Image (cartoon, rainbow, N blue to C red; front, top):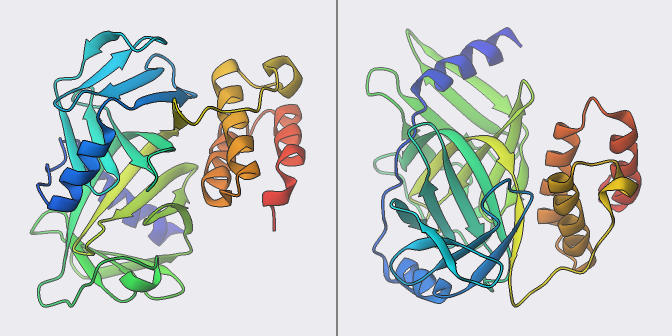
Length: 281
């Protein structure tokens, strides 16, 4: 555990927050065009409840779709992924389903971009994580590089200071082309690009849910019944909708987030575990 702590402390120092690189690939442009005028109803967020892309900018909108404010900085980072930058210390990444019906926003406090190691053979990621097995990604400062690799069973994280230190963790799949593991209670997401050439290390502070206005939710348990704060109750209801629709991956991701947020609240935690017992092994 000492190695794990020192290794991730080293990585934490090198995480920064910057606008993701805008991709101009045809597939990304097609994705961006498909988002035009879709109203996203976000679940669990504090202030940004509804979001719309007008073809040029993202807008926070009212329930009826009227623009409240426009975000100055955004980037289409990959197929199915875009980023909004709120400040120098906080951004959000949004992971959108292929059918443009579901969205998973995450608040990010730091990130590192990785590239496939020079000379590495890569291919589009159609089967995850099989299609990324044994590919090495390199990122971080030149003097203190960081390497990532999925070996088929464990995810390897290596940092070179005086010598290479490697820690192996067992991640879960949190979203499309996304690994999740937890360090000292904080989730870390490793997202991989659709073409297999890039990866992003994301320090996550919050995970939310959401759906397109055309795909409304149905679950409506009251916060008084669940013992959850209203925003978390919205996430739990969304997770129930996902589970009933057969989307166990996204439902389980939201359940883990709710369990983290309610780790010191035994009654709420017990209710969550009973409600979503079918997600447990």
